[in-house]
Image (cartoon, rainbow, N blue to C red):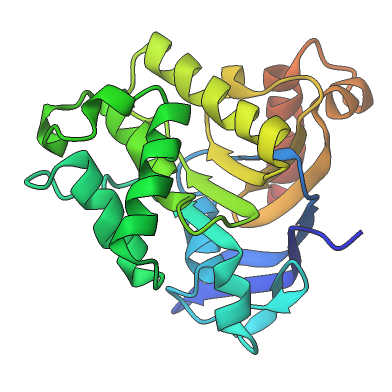
Length: 248
């Protein structure tokens, strides 16, 4: 089966500082994969390479078999992205935000409106279509950004720290929405976070620490292999062992 996302031997540096060091992992289609790392681990750099904000000079990145450097059009058509920074135009209505974004993908206004209504209904925001974006709560804005990212019907969705700044209920609602999309639409999802409690036992987890992918397994497998009580304890053991090796 062709992976939704394949990262192979990817490295990236900012001058002398190496942000990513020979990172490799795959996101299967129809799966929820967590990219787990502390701030500064390299998560946002990796997202910038996948989305071609930065050029990948070392290694290969494929989206459903399409290389992001050699076939960017085909690759990025399969990709939806929710960045860490909020990106809605606060002076436009929710629907205007969606229609504008759809136009960037060549989707006409009538079809964009139809898709937008369906996406907002799925996100529980059908009644907010004509409200200005600034009237929404933080969690509602995030749900609109997810709806917007899916308008062109991609098969891979990237979310970079999507729950930062949200309260407990808003975080839970967002997770439930995205996990539901994985089940209903067979989306491949890469969910970047530093929050341990967003991980389920059956999630595939990529532990990224100081630019290196230290573990790539199901959460429960990592816990068992580390002899840990939970994924938080396992994360501490894996990253601690890596730091001890570096300082030795």
